[in-house]
Image (cartoon, rainbow, N blue to C red):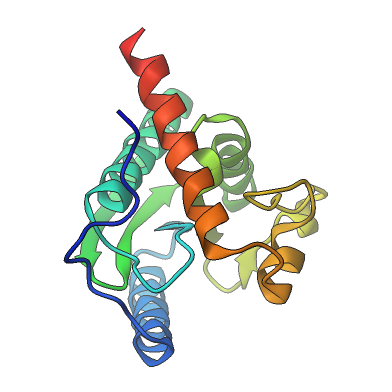
Length: 183
């Protein structure tokens, strides 16, 4: 069975709601940085279009949290705080990790680039007193577009690919992951 990207009664969100959600996320990030003084991982989904929430995005983000936590355990990093939010603007999670920020960012890039669902995750690392660590600042290549090999930002800004094509690609990625998990 193919993964469902949309549900019949899924709520659409507009630009104002997305901007407000981004501001609220930044406020939560700043509070966590001030409270713990350690880097954090802010996790969201790559979900184009006006529908950001539903069973599929929630499941895929939950898997991102599990994989991030496994990566931390494997490296001996303590998770000091974790919080997941299931909102109509899309699922998100925030975890504070007792680790070196650069090492943490490299581990998150590894998940984004090598996990079968990693292309659907946005795993940002923010360190106290610093801006968000970028792939480029660490010499890593930018994220690829869901539909082609160009940088994702280029295709996203130009709206090069129709929404249906992007949602079909997301469904295919999840379907292929599910097939691997069964076998």
